[in-house]
Image 1 (cartoon, rainbow, N blue to C red):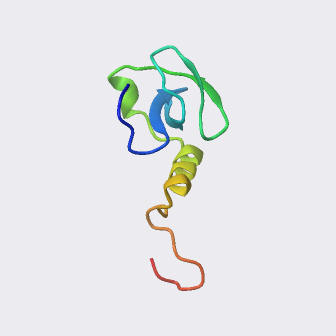
Image 2 (image 1 turned 45 degrees about the horizontal axis):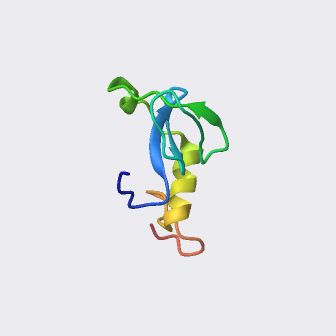
Length: 78
């Protein structure tokens, strides 16, 4: 089993890079953090697809890291 630093990993599927808690292989149907059920596509080109924004937001929430450029509430600071 591969080491995972976080409780999720990235998977190219449905022409986006999604995040999932599943361990997957090419062709597997997986549940993404955005709520979509997608089919994994493990090709060199698929890793260059854009990132699913809802998955990215949820991944940042899970690890407790603010999204880049997000402002802290009430401070006006980055």
